[in-house]
Image (cartoon, rainbow, N blue to C red):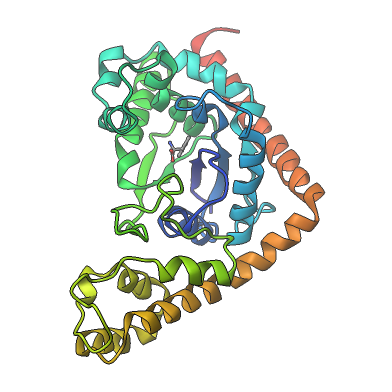
Length: 326
Ligand code: TRP
């Protein structure tokens, strides 16, 4: 039976943190079992919010190492850089003719980003962000796109564009669907809603146990639990949120200890850091392997890009034929 096709992508922002892992990567690794996956490193998309490219190569390799460390199998799933496959730009241009600027200006994800980054105006390429993302998906005939809630509006635009192309020129593309990651955001260690490297409140997938302990020691807890013995409220404590994801069967005991006061925050954080470090240990080992064998990283990209290119060229041949472009 033909397996479904998944296209997943991330912008190369360097080393990944636990929020990336829980929110996306963990799911990608699981999906490899059931689907054919293409994994895209969206380096052109990175330009929409950052023109400085001096760290893009390094950030790409750091992210790639985290993908491999987490268990993405490059033998099964091609991993490739968007900018290495010229067909992305070609399909992007064609698709941009099929959507209005007004439709793109209404995109809530874009509006949020403009607000968060305090931009007073949006660039032409940035406005086209979801059009480029659509080219990413349709070139590989992606049927499912694993994304968080915030990306769902982009995928909606991809669906509209696939329909519009098919109606105008003939049936070439499947209509992609978002595969929403069921995941409540991992909070930052400072109590902010979201873990983020730029906010400095993140645990990196590649952090060593000592540094995880040090970061956890500084984490914000229930402000009403001042010392051991005070009853705590696990539901308002971000350390407890981390326990629920990393400490598994010990969670009921930790909850009871916090609520009764018998478990102090210092010990609770130490155990939490330990649980996280234990879970990340196999990742650190795999990462070390690639640190020591950087030539293997180049091989992963080269072979992924060759496979991606075959598919992208085949799709563009169909597109040109459907459009009568010869
Ligand atoms: N917009 C995605 C993000 O910021 C990255 C991305 C680019 C992507 N192209 C894609 C995701 C195609 C899924 C499919 O996370």
